[in-house]
Length: 184
Image (cartoon, helix red, strand yellow):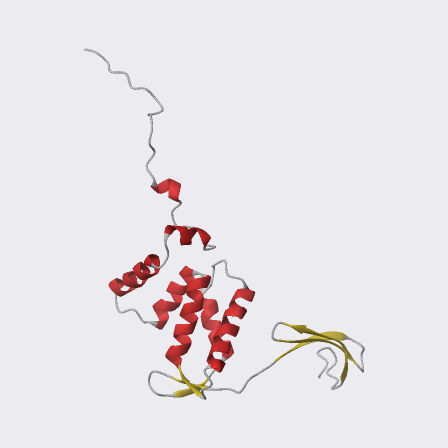
């Protein structure tokens, strides 16, 4: 391992630990003595994506991560949540056991997991992925999303409502001030 401080080509491993789907190693440079951390992750055999225009393209975890980050921009979604989502999509793709996978399968998996993670990010991703032709098709997707969640489900999703429930409900009861009719 090359030392990031002095560029020396040899180091020793001081500590190793399992983290998630990989290994974290603490290393020490044999020349300058500086310590640094490296992460190793298992990389399964790569596969190709078959695009809509029949082109083949090698699967890129980074490209998938970038697309999901754009959909989750300015949303309460942590970097770890995005990492887990990408890990799950990648795992599902490897479980298919195919060398070539249609890109539509990747898009559908991402939408499935985004829908459970953050509905706004889901709509953002769907608007790009499905290339809505008009406002009506966009509205249909939102309506389908809303029908999929009852009011009880909405309370369990970690998202704030656009309009609080108490702001929508009319106030019932006596008026605050009494109005007295003035005679002639």
